[in-house]
Length: 48
Length: 197
Image (cartoon, rainbow over all chains, first blue to last red; front, side):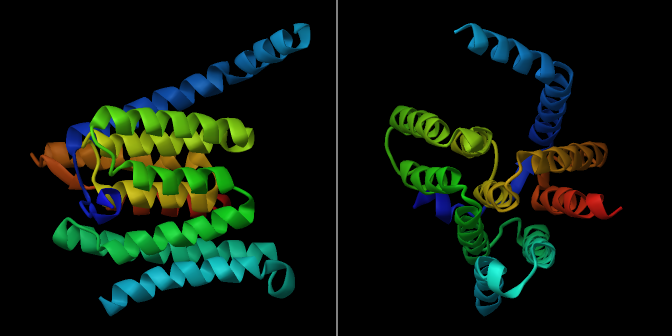
């Protein structure tokens, strides 16, 4: 149970910053493009 | 030790209270109880993280078990089973085998319960961060527990933002490492309180 026994609660500052940027960019892209992507997928599904 | 077990047990008990929802409580009251217990657990974990840079296993394990009970009650069986599976996959060797199993199991979890596919993808991503040594085990277990307990992956957005702010502050203070449970607690607190504001 290597996963359960790992109790480290520390992280490097760079990783925290990178994760924050990646999550924010992903969320922004989802907000901008999400509806368009869903419409395209539904369109393709309708044609199939 | 007794304190850790008590805190972990409190999360499990909250899960069982939630199971009794139709008989004893309204949904809103239990939602508040679960959120309160979650925040208490995270606060205790944060204190340990600030003090020792580690979170005792009974706390994180109790959180995972409580989240699993709640998740099953919410019908999120696929993310719960995926978490259990990934816990076992973590012991496989070599790494290629672990990654292959994790990806395959996550794909099946998403296929079998499409409504929870996003949660499964998020759990896999968080587990991968641990697998590659990017995040500590306590942080990862708490993040997975929160994601399943809340049942909404958007809780990770305020946590990530809080982590970014904490990272900037730590960089300005020339610190190389941060206790990430502080960000987890702050992000979860914001997520829980935001609808009330």
